Amino acid sequence: MNWLDVGEFGGRYCFITMPEIFSSDKFATSFGFKFIEDFSYLILMTDGIYDPKFVVEANLEKIENGKNFLKI
Image (cartoon, rainbow, N blue to C red):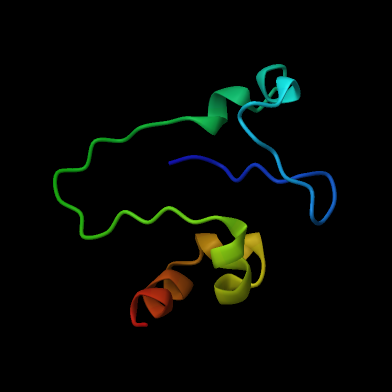
């Protein structure tokens, strides 16, 4: 429902309270909503969760990795 806000280099965080977030060209993609009639899971993760489980951000978009995560 949104894109990851990642920093310019490893270990850099982007928070919604940072002024540069509001002036970014990607600001509109930071928030979104979607109506779904039926769903089983809503998962919110920080990088402290997805780093050890998914290794890199690109793996978050792979359906098979999500299925494997939910088997835990």
